[in-house]
Length: 263
Image (cartoon, rainbow, N blue to C red; front, top):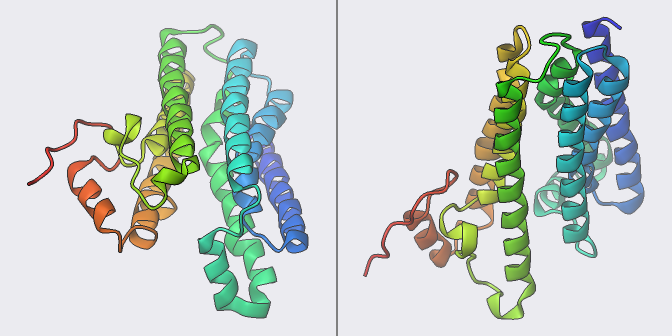
């Protein structure tokens, strides 16, 4: 299958996948299912590409497995975290804003937009499986794997630490500044970005693979400026003095030693 046709098939598939999620969200009256399906969408793209592409088999398998591990972990994490809870405040605000039109607005503003972002972020995974050369694993594959491993360990550990903190009633209303969260206000997002930079390093070994830098750049920008760091801190924690003090002493993204508390 030609590369452009493969990319088009994958885009149509992920759009259909998220549209199916939209139909489910109408029944549940909860658009947050889009976030739950996010990781599974990458798994879908990875394996659709695996069975369509004729690239170097070992690199194809490596990329498909790495995306599957990351995507399934994220799916389980978000699904269990949101179980029994109401709609995400972002979507609830949009539901109130658009009223009776939200059922349609959510299709393109929530589900199809996420499908497009998902497909763009997965460009590296798709191209890396299409490339037939080099027909061997290289040091870049090893380096990318190490970076991916560091990313998923950081992301999973940060999510676990935050989950335990929030599950303790004594921490209600408090600010998580322990473990990895002592060195970064968003270590889970940093880990996720590392995952995709690791995948990019693997794909760089392929001819013109450096052009897929769009994948990690988009996910990093999204985490920093769109749906992650900036949005969360401007909405959920803007009126929390304890969190504002946490901001002043703690790196926002890349883990670093905290500043000393001011007396």
